[in-house]
Image (cartoon, rainbow, N blue to C red; front, side, top):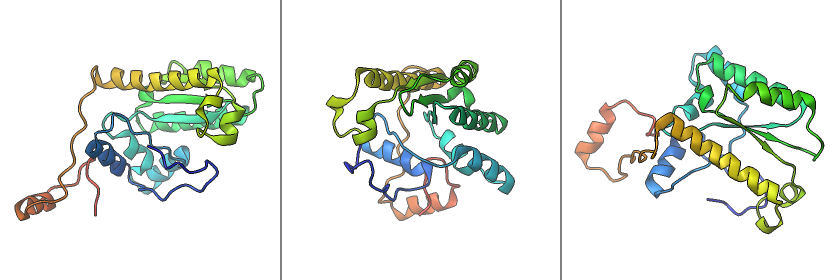
Length: 207
């Protein structure tokens, strides 16, 4: 699914509740749904703990067959922020071993030693660490002209998708189960009354 906007366009107004994305996956017969979010993970976890709530990160992690992917710049500052995020995920008891890390090269330079060291230390703690090379065509035009992408970029995309699938299969087995279908939109009065008396689940979104 794509909105076909220019990559520099402002993001669409999309539902904040992760369960809404799960419903979208379940009702449409999609094999895979990728939700690209930009919420500050570490801040979200710490703020949720301070407020005594579950937080957005925990809500995403609790969805069936959900594999979190953290994207970090392949720089000293980037891996420092990544390490803080991983510590927060682990401290909160979220599924760290299911997590996939994408280390994104920002400028095509040689990877600093601190980045290599961080990747080596993180690899046993998470599902996978996947390096994503710098690609000027991707930076300039996003995915509008796929033919201009470098072979290494396509290889990295394949490796990232493979890591996500492997993480899901390790967590839930092979083949993966069928997504639970959300409740029908048009319900009889008896169904509606039954639904009102039930507590919302991860597959339901409040009206």
